[in-house]
Length: 95
Image (cartoon, rainbow, N blue to C red; front, side, top):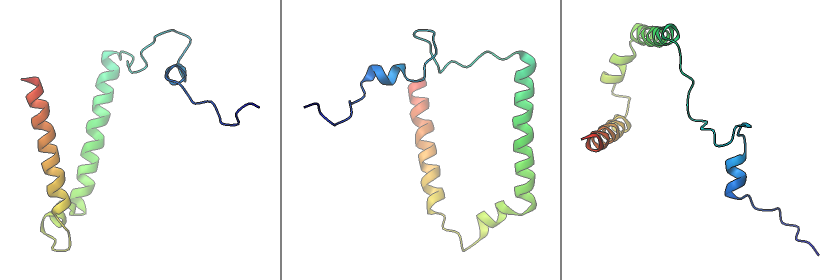
């Protein structure tokens, strides 16, 4: 009597799942953008950042975050420590 359990996926199944017809293609490689497209992409990012900063400053987000007694600052301390640790680890690997 055959087993009723489904067949377990192998590594070959996972590697072939979702790949194109080109064998051994690297799906992590992004296509090269032209110089004009790169400039437009960077300008869009800068505009989004500036708009976000303007809106956050208009609603006094930063001063509320820094001076409000109702905000717990421990998560920010942990996040800052994690960021500094990550940057130190990356810098250590580069040098």
